[in-house]
Image 1 (cartoon, rainbow, N blue to C red):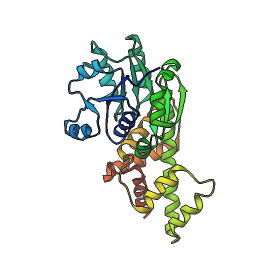
Image 2: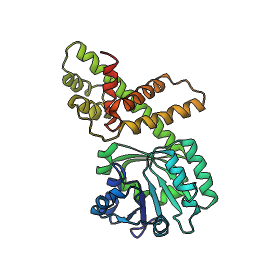
Image 3: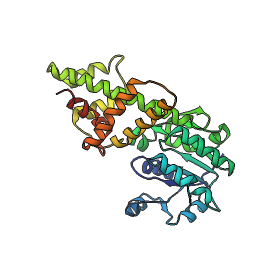
Image 4: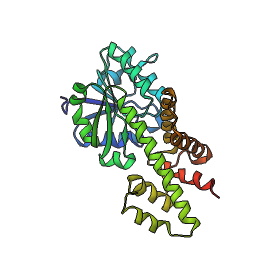
Length: 294
C-alpha cells in the first residue's frame, strides 16, 4: 500500500488533471509535474504543484506517474516512444493512465512495459470538470488486481464510483461504452428539445417533467441545463468527445460490428467539432442537431 510519502507525478494538468492534482495535495501527498506547455508554469506553481523542468529528473523523482493527456499517440510516445519513459535509467514502476485512449493500444503498451517490470493501470474517468474538482469522478480501471489494490487510496481521493473492470485495456473499453451512451443521450435530448420548440412548448418545463421519470439522466440534468442556458463553457470539450467517439467507432469496426447509433453520433460530433465548436462544451452538439432541423 502506498503512503503519504509516495511521490506522485502528473503529466497533463489541464481542465481535468489540475483539480485531480490539487485534491491529492489537499490529502497531503507530494505532487510533482512535468509541464510540456511552458506557458502554464506560473499558473501551476500557484496551485502548490512542484514543477520539475527536466523529464529525466522528473521520472527519477517520482514513484507513481499519472497521465491525463488527450491522444493515444501522446501516451505511446511518452511511455514507449524514442526517449520515452521506458528508455530512462531511473523511472517509476507504476503508471496510471487516466487519459481516454484506444484500448487495443493500451494493451499493447502494457505488454511492452511489463517486459520492463513497469505496471500500467488504465483508469479513464467520467464526471467532467465538476467531478474532478469535487473528487467525485467515476473511475473505470483496467489492470492487475494487486497493483490496483496498492494504489486504491489515490483513486478514493479522486473518485466516488471506483470500479475495477478487469485486465489491462478493460477500463478503456468501459470508457468507450460511456462515451457512446453519453453522446447518444445528448442526441436524444437535442431531438426532444427541437420537438418542443416546433410546438412552441417551454423546453425548461419539458426538462423538469422528464427529470421526474425514466428519461432522467445525468446528461439531462447537466447538458440539458447547459443547452437551455446556452452555456457552452467547456467542462468537457467537443474536440475531446469527438476523439473519444472516433476511438469507439474504430474499435467497433475492428470487431466487425455495425453500430448505427455510434456511427451517427460520431458523424455529428465530428461536424460539431469542425463547425467552430471544438473548444466549447460537448453539449454544443445540440447546435449541430438544431442546424440540421431548420
